[in-house]
Image (cartoon, rainbow, N blue to C red; front, side):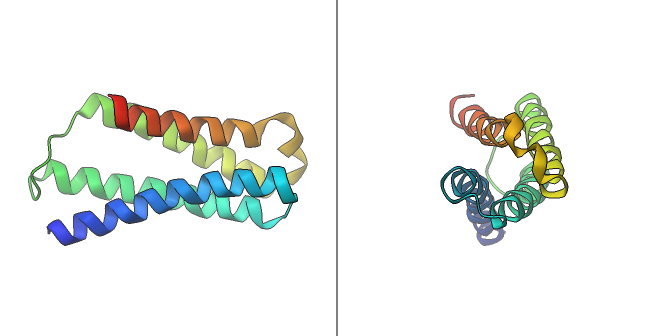
Amino acid sequence: MEIVYDVLVVLHLLGMAGILSGVLIHYTAKAAAAFAAMLHSAILQVITGLALTGIASAGLVDSDVNNTKIAVKLVVAVAVLVLALVLYRRRDLADRGLVAAVGGLTVVNVIIAVFW
């Protein structure tokens, strides 16, 4: 089960990288693919985060679970997912700072993961 957990961690980190690369692509190249990258990466983040929490909570790996931290991270991740979905559906809203909010909330989630 350790291998599955480690693969999920890698996928979770790739999801975070995908969100941030979508933000950077939007600000540098204004490519339409940026919104799809943000959306799919946000979906990957939420799914792998839930799977990691489930595996750790079940006691299948040697990892402590802080339920308060997980709840805060889930709320932030769902907010990122909703914003990414809004941007994917309504690209005209990208100029209103929603892309910056997606990137900022993703960085906040990383900070929570590392320092909490």
